Length: 476
Image 1: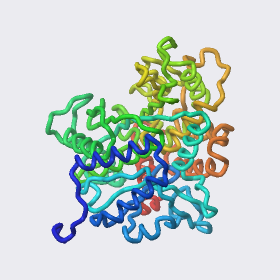
Image 2: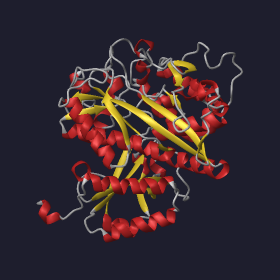
Image 3: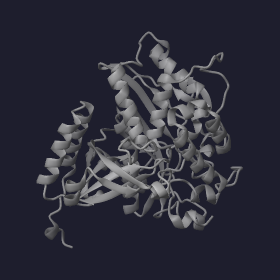
Image 4: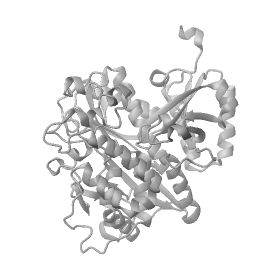
């Protein structure tokens, strides 16, 4: 159909950035939800160029799901959007499948028409159980409830920024086709900071950065990473729920742009042996009354005792949380000390093999960098577990806790055992959600060779939780 006949909304990237930054500012300033809701409903009613509203939510493993609702239907039914939860991995059983989507009006995005389609806007949803309460397996709702509680009780604003690395490979759907090809093909042989202005990897990074900028990410820097065909596009910190939302949007943007270029943006932690793996370093801080509580110019490494207690609790529970941070079979290939892997349960300002790094900062940027995280982790579960543990976890009475020679598991079975035995993971997730998550991890692990070996095995790609076509999973 001719675009001239459609008259669907298509905004310039400058207009998109202005709209998205305004929405982001409302979120930062905690504008009352009823005020934002009224503003969004009026906008949707008045803007004739919008045809559909895309509602996004994530399953228990962190896989992003999207439903498009016709705008006119959405305006009539936004408070009663039901869906079949039994079709979502880790959600409801078949005999209790009816779930509902609530709308988080503050998490509203305008996306470029050339990437998301003309006449569409995006908004994150919250999964609601039959009793009207937030659904326990929707970790976004759990994280939002926790962050809200910390602000109301203690005045804390939880901030995060994730550095998400990825690979760009030849061909569309390279992971899904791996069982046929047995290999991934680079688009660039360059390395850290190295790419020519118009090579394929640089064009992809530039295009993704443009879209992120338009969607209010507030970009900082972007560059090729250490491994060939590897990339990283950094952006500013945000309140913790918005930060997790941006992880999901980042991956969606990268995959969509790569697909339009006939390529694949891959977020497997270690798709190719012999080169650096892919991480999602998670930078976190806590603010109160506009003050960064992690900063202390007189403190050790210029961070506060509050921050060091946060560090110690993460280190104490590091093995408990490892399965949350590294949630796939393939993730344990990345925890290899030969490739700057952060597999040591210690903290350091300089050693990048440490689970936690203390970056050089000031009163604005002081933070902790949790490095032992794969890019396929559920960002909501990840950030919830980091903040919940950092502020409420135990501190072990271990001599030299911050520098002792202790290591994270090097395989998913040991990580599952630690996770299952841990009282702490039961406390933060609840028995039911913990059990569901563990069952999903075990199902994937049992379909793969127990020993990682030195070559990538087809099942660790085929049954990776991001490769979710029924056809592939039914090959087992």
